[in-house]
Length: 526
Image 1: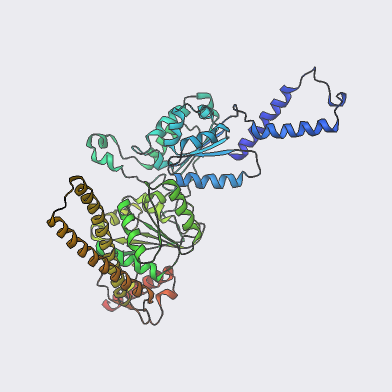
Image 2: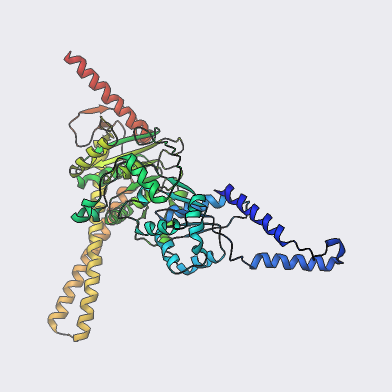
């Protein structure tokens, strides 16, 4: 795209130079210009180039992404590549002031990177530069399957209708569509599932039919398809594992893993409420968690991403807003705190690690109510065997339970105190309005204060107890390794501390041991 834009700009300048020549213009050697004149002309030229913008500059390329973070990432990479060219790039997305983004568009950038919602909003406000969108020569849509899925990005359909309105420009335009799960079966959006009438209209398509629909919708002619997908759906350098446990025990296993295997870890949840709860809990456990979810302010989202990228031992707890496209370097582990609702989400989540031929580990925490989703995931990926189990030590788990249970108590106490503070402020305001000063009220107030003081002391005592526990290292020598929530038996690991092993090597050794024991049992039966 950049090469094509540079060629078109060069051709345009040459045509402009040819047309600007005039037969009445005297040749330079016939004009008497002093050195002072040359200096003044040069300064004026630099000033004009700096402050004057050609409002008729064409819009050559449009790049569309589903998330703001992905738009920022593409902007950074593209600007780095185009550093020594005169190609201008602007990024527009929701969450930031539209006025500032309109100022960027007044400079008439040759490439615009955008999310569909904000782009359509600016087009409807009759932005001058975006009025040229029907004449673009390059269209790029990232995460295309998600972007064009029925019920997700309604503005994109309107954008494509506008872009494809110019038949001549459509024939000249180059289109690029990308996704890691372009031909994978996609689940219907939840709001369509609930609406029976609409859901009946959404037919399940074969991969070939889906691809044909994409080509027709985008307005592509003579498309070339490059398929780099793996047979098993995930990267070959990715080690996958699972933990079967009760839903209320997931916090224990998550803390166990984080304590045993420090590293850049990304934890995925299915809801914002789950993210907020985990961030609050693991903050008490001194894990310094960062969060990322859709309703978070854009500045904070970008700030948390920067912190996560900068710290090799950072912990980021996020919804699926962080699952697609984000190229965060050197993510060691991806933990699925909840089994993703769709196979495509599992592939995209797991794709945040094991990137660029690096090794990575993903762990699925599976509760009893999620077994069906896990079975469907394996079926969709064409797997005939279960994922290997992540082994744990009961001795370590006992210490982990003590810490996490205490942190849960502290979290509940803190939440109760905050609720009472809000309730009390409301009651105080009501009392002021009615000016109630009875003896009964004053006695009740004294009782409340005593109770509040007692709870504060208990809260401080619990915090002190937890801080003392966290100051001690978890004892893990001479471990007995076992599989959580399964009567599989024990696997002797010897005197090696789990912290001395990477999570990947631990899972591999555990699986090798399990397969060896399975083989030995078969031989005994014979």
